[in-house]
Image (cartoon, rainbow, N blue to C red; front, top):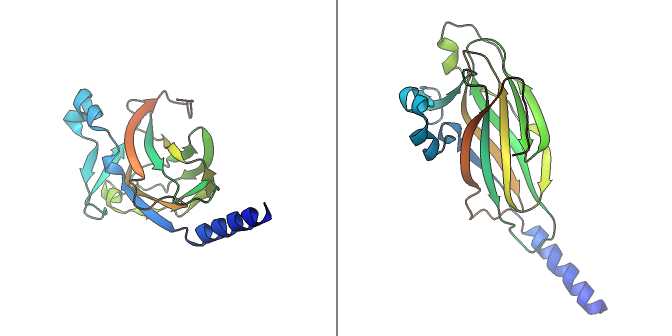
Length: 199
């Protein structure tokens, strides 16, 4: 029994040493699902994204409050990398955004658990501020979550001018780097004043 226990500890130690930490970036202009593009007439007419020469992929996601408070939802598929029995780790390392108007407010949730909030800079540059992207830096603590499918949600309180997003960058630990970690996305709208619900 003692030999088995020692062997198990040795296996766990070897697995822990081999655990990788890596980052992945999701271009937020790709957040609307294809089904949303097909079904929403307003989206087909005005589009979700807009050309921006300073954005990483030359375009950004523009959202405003004309239909309610926007919620960007990313589905994460987290497959554990090793036999290590620990949970997997995720952290929000950066969100790149631009604004040309009053301050906007963001709340970030992992599933239904609050992670962090952030207030954007306010700019009044007659439209030129949209191409001046800023970085939030790391938001909130490193999260230790169960493997499987998780939902990362960005809830946005904005105005008629809106706010634009370039990308979000996440850091992962004890997650298989060979798997696709971003496995779905969508945008929906909550009534103004609502910040979270459990679906």
